[in-house]
Length: 248
Figure 1 (cartoon, rainbow, N blue to C red):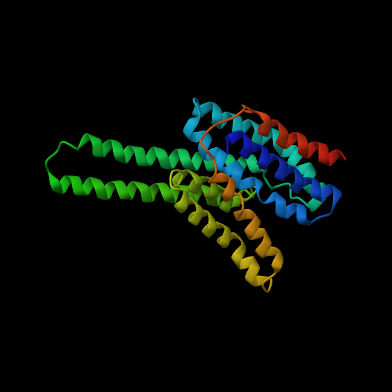
Figure 2: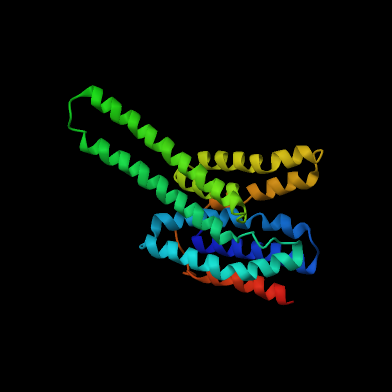
């Protein structure tokens, strides 16, 4: 499955999710379908980080559309499901997810540079210290990711803490599909397990959890190919469809 196919699936399921509020009601089967969209967008961010030719422009693009999308997001949310003016749209979550990947990668690569510079040193004690330091760097990187996830939660971004972690685990386990699947399953359980228990084992939360986990089937089928280029389709479609649905 190409990147293009993944994006189309995400766009369609996102639209169904939001259109459901307009044509069906505040909560419906459309919301179950809509759970497919975000994990795919999160995966695309991890892939975008790997393949972008200009990371600075990638950050700027996400930042600009975060701001551009905020008014349509607020108008739609306020009209159809009691949105809060302090809530931030999903682009802010994706931006923080990208930032978490960048900072983690920067820290881990710094530790690898230190190891390479000391590879020729015969001092085994020093090499052991370098390996320990490398693990410390990774822990520091994880802490920074968690802090950014917490910031997303404090800022009330769409999907918040959970959303940033999803972006990060797709990057962290990108080449290990089994570990990616397990990690994503754990995150889905973490997101819906407590509501499931608190609601006396509501079938709704069970289905939401399963639908949120479902896109891993598409993600692990990704073949690494881009397909037709639709670079700005997501960026333009997101605020445009929210504004259109608001005006209906």
